[in-house]
Length: 119
Image 1: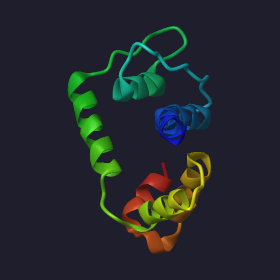
Image 2: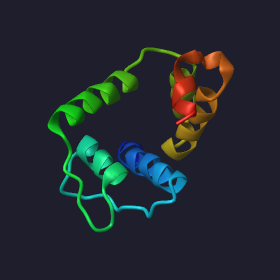
Image 3: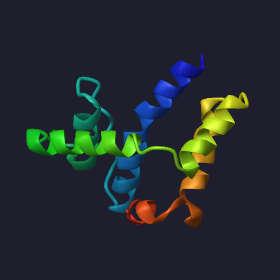
Image 4: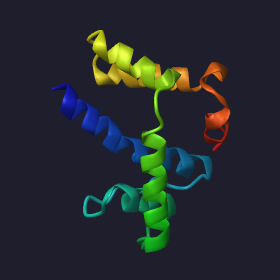
């Protein structure tokens, strides 16, 4: 079921991003907390330690939630077209998302993603 696969991919993105951050800082990976919502769980994974649970600031959580929404809904560009074309050709989401990432990293995509690549 492609819809379920897409939901699972989206659900894993904050975990992958947080694990990359933890790895870059030499910190142990924190498992997601299934009792938390998307943004709060991302903040928990980014800032919790194995011995302490992170309590997200509601203002920060709300702001980050809006940033995620704005970034996800950013019109038609090369990476959006790439994933749509790959998906419409019958490719499953696990093949379409890496195609989008490859397109996102190219200079023709635009300079809006340059700071994100450097994180």
